[in-house]
Image 1 (spheres, helix red, strand yellow):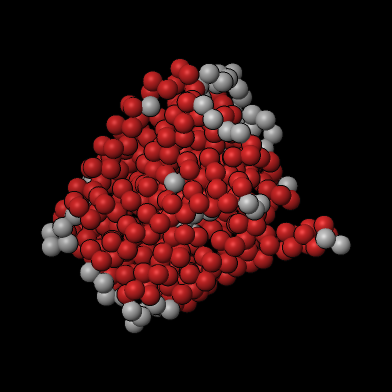
Image 2: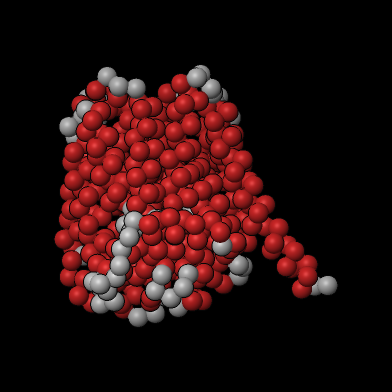
Length: 402
């Protein structure tokens, strides 16, 4: 691995971090923002749904733009849109939150396809699961930034201070956009300004992900895994404070530890997937762990805090730690030069999970359905995907030994 690869890994790690951070600021300050604005804190589930609905639609079609503009330029556009959307959120009205969700969702769509495009060109095939996993630690790192902004800048006794978290994270996004600009000359050298871009590309990329058997399995995994992740990140801060009765600082401390564990777990699973077991075998194990952890969270009311913390850590080590493995598999199966478009097609199903799980959770809550039922229901798709990934591995192993 050369210096250029290390530069790409670090730059894309932080680009990914900003993308995820932008999505998580509102969920982490929802109780305080809701109190200050006299809104139901659970309305954040609609914000998450809108954010990822737009992101999913755009992710399936931005691959051509990444090829045309270059991955660094696409990353800069992403960071600009995220920073402006976070700033707009400070207006504090429903229309501002909705417009910001649209803006940030569109900007977010460039993040993962662009980083996959860059890494696929420079990663040795053997170490791709590890390299993609290191890059994907940007997600829990971004989660940490969002939690820390809420923890350090928002005073529970002064709910109106919720805007501080948005201002700080907006500035971080815009500063990173400037920092990565010098990389463009060297790392966008493969851009093709004449590459044709059509909105119909989205349909083609989604269809390819759904019809190709190997990609279809990964798309199902993306849907179930991102769905669990989205549900947890959208409601845990509110659930812990309003349902489990934890103070704001305790709820956010749990999230800080969970995201920290997830960052290290991603690297660990990437190492395992590069050295000791197939990526799909590791993904199958993680699917079963996240299913058990998700269901257990729904049963946690009245449990000791150490047990809730252990379950949350298990969730972080599974549902927040699989991304590099799955994305490296997508890159491996992609035709040369088409990693961005193929990744976008698979990511569409992740966005579908991210928007549908929180959306249906909000609907169920409006009808008086318990958090217990919501969490247990969300665990079922992950368990089914675990079976889907594991059975072929077992069959192939049995055939080799008979």
